[in-house]
Length: 232
Image 1 (tube, one colour):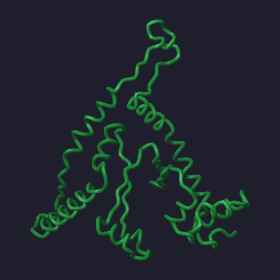
Image 2 (cartoon, helix red, strand yellow):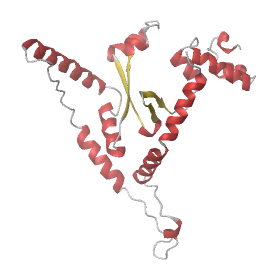
Image 3 (cartoon, one colour):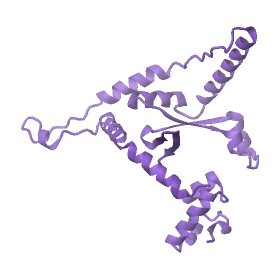
Image 4 (cartoon, helix red, strand yellow):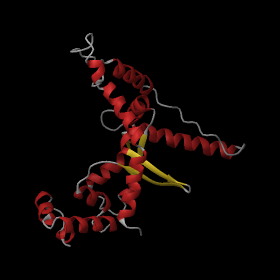
């Protein structure tokens, strides 16, 4: 198994590669949020100086497109692999299953997953979506009431991320990694990957070496973390 530094290096390279793309997304957000300002040279012109050029027009245009497309769910169509009755029947079953999951996907919380997809597509011409199969994710966890309730709602969890936080790195052999750039606490990593995960253990040891009081700090903030996790 490769050391965590190898994966960190891939992630850093992927983020650097997308620098120009992320700067473009940042400029889109400036206009969408009404935060764009003229350059200093333009601001010093007599007929521009002291005036505010914020406008809701960019946001209105993007939101109008998202609302239009988000109100209509896509029709799923699968082409049969062969020209016979069994192949057509199998394709119809797959269409029904996917359509059912698509509808369940859009029954979560406030703004639906489909709406978020359309927003991302309209704003950035890109969609970064993460799919998790929950029965596999929680296969080693105790099936308590909370988990049973979660699994009864849907077998999948879909998360639409900001495209500027998702980076991929490709070599001549294909895609090497996909990186989600976000801030996470040490406890978040333990909760997601487990305290016995090699990467979690390696990160814990590095944190402990750099900051000897790290165990005490974690213990104060997260009293329910097992003590064996905090030991070097």
